[in-house]
Length: 111
Image 1: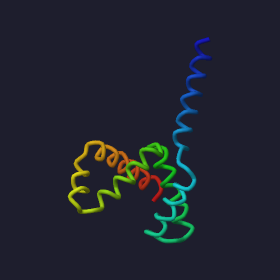
Image 2: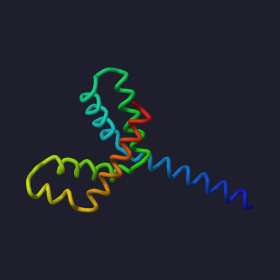
Image 3: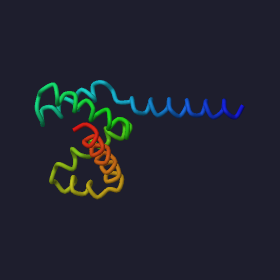
Image 4: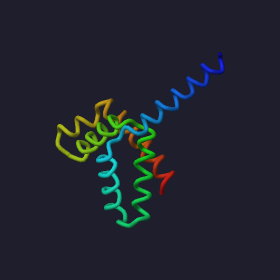
């Protein structure tokens, strides 16, 4: 009986991790790949590397976290007082740190 419970727990955990890793919409993945290729090289090798990178990022953070971090990154690019004030918000730093770690891991895995 204990073996069945352990097996069911393992399957449920594995399934939930898989769902989390695949919650990025296809459009978001495509946009990432196009942006990645345009800032590198637009060839098949980089298409594979960029596709790998977004898959690795998706393994580490949810799509909601990614979308929030992307919005924060756009605000961080500006230099107005409002945007400067936004950089000091704790949640912004937290989200960006998580995205930076996921991006670093994807660079190591894919490039």
